[in-house]
Image 1: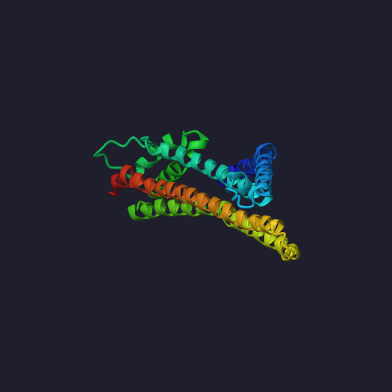
Image 2: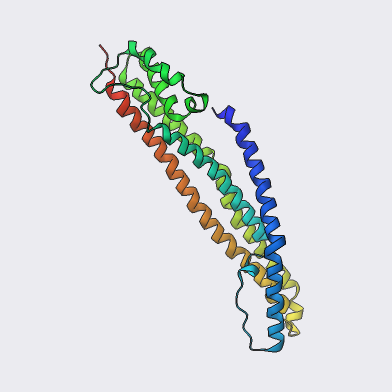
Length: 266
């Protein structure tokens, strides 16, 4: 399953990154930076006319720098990856609404019956057969036929579900890395802004603090935006993890309800 999906998933992630870069950069070039420059120009004119003028904080100015642009690119890339994972989880959850085994209530399943019960599962389309639920059911049926032991069959289901849980968790490592990288990019902007401010300290001593305040604005704005985006990303990540964990638990419950409780050994 993983080997078949990896090339497509890798291609999807690369394509999603390229699309995120193009879209975000186009928005910044066409909308964000022109509006930010217009706001700064207006504020400079007002300050020149009125020394008591207090400039309002503008969203365009907050997000105009390269660090914020990079953070938005990373955020949308992570959201695209999570959307792909969420679609897979929803598709697998749909199988839980189907009766894949067609075992009548009150009917016992003997080891000799497992081959017949396996056929509808093996006849599923490849995309569905590789999902967690059919794999868990097929593993349970094969184990019951070979061992004739109900406890071993239950352990086989649990092992498949635990392995799937670990796989799903490991596949989110890229999203976790992005969630770590976004604040790091913000801190890079902070270091850059403070460095530029220190480089203009001599102007501040002479009474011109415009350059210093602009550089400090870069420093604090980048961290502020990065932390907000990181909070949003972590919330979405936890929601996805919750959905995946529920899928695994519901699959175990399905196997218990639709198969394991019907098993019987003569």
